[in-house]
Image 1: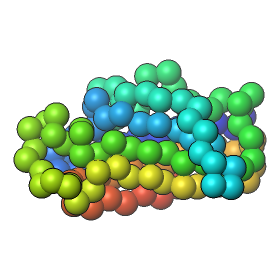
Image 2: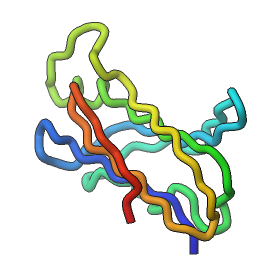
Image 3: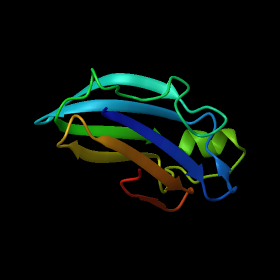
Length: 118
């Protein structure tokens, strides 16, 4: 059964990025339609589980937008204006709607990395 999930780790503080705001968008050419907005829970994940479940999964282009600077500012980190990293937009494709797609983000105020998880 297909699904899409994410998980964010704060590498500056060595913890889950609890409280970070995230948007999931479906891309259609230059258009980006926000299909879900949520705040990460204590474990750095979506409280509702999968972002897209088997019935909602469709092949296509997607974007997760992580609000990085507001998260770090809320944790008391002093950032320059403008911040080096404000938002992290991750564009990715879903080729197999029956597949499992996990998009983790490792982030600090100055760097980030991602990969296709399991």
